[in-house]
Each structure stands twice: as structure tokens, then as C-alpha cells.
Image (cartoon, rainbow, N blue to C red; front, side):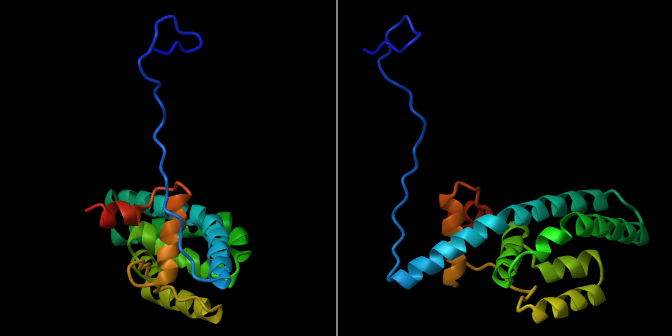
Length: 177
């Protein structure tokens, strides 16, 4: 029996929080370790933007469902786009090319829809094409999908998010089935 500080009655056990022990990641060389650590830094920097985009997208979908006309929906989407552009454009302009590529993958991971399709659906095809062309100038493809089962970098991204304690939408939906 154990008597805990501040307790008068003896306890037969001590309640502890759950601890998760991860298997160490196996990297074959020092170069792979450097790539992984650099990717980790980039993912942890960009992930909050992807989460925020996912939340805003969910809210946008819910609000658009309550609107009647197509014109009203387009106006609202345009207003939201201008608001987001004003709020985040300065921060997103400071991202590197690789961080932009990771952001596009993480947005697909969080929403289940590619960035190009999001713009095409909620704005228009011309704007999506212009954004795609502009992104290509910076070596970013808005049609990139997050595929951790076939792409090593995406697998590492999942591992990084899982180890950092962030809820992993992909893990919950696909691996636990």
C-alpha cells in the first residue's frame, strides 16, 4: 500500500498517464538523417498553416451549404479569399520552395482534396490555372497528392507528425481500419 502526499487513505496502485514508446526510425546513412531532420523542421513550420487551411475549408463548405444562389456563393468565396490573402500572404511569401511543396502536400493530407481542385471548385478554373502556372515558376505543383504508402518523403512526413503528437488524419482514416 502507498500513501500519496495529501491523501489519508492508502492506495493499492499509482495512476500514471499513458506513455507511447515509438520504435526508433531506421535511417541508412548520415545523409538520410540530415534529410529527415531538415524535413522535420520544415513540416513542423508549415503544418499549422495546413491545419488552419483545413479548418477554414470546413467552415467555408458549411456556410456555402446554407447559401442559395451560385452568384452568392462565388461572392462569399471571393470575400474569404481576399481575407485569407490579406491575413497570410506576407507569412506565406517567406516560405522556401520546399516548404511550399510540403504545404501543398499537407493541405491535400488534411482536406483530402488537392490545392488545385480546391481553387477550381470554389473560385474558377481560370484562377486555378493561373495559380498552377505561378506555382510552377517556383517549382511547386498544386496537383501534388500526399501518398505515404508509395512516396518515402510522405512516409517521413507522416512519421514526423505522428511522433510530434499531432493528430494524423491519414493515420486515423487509413491505417487503423
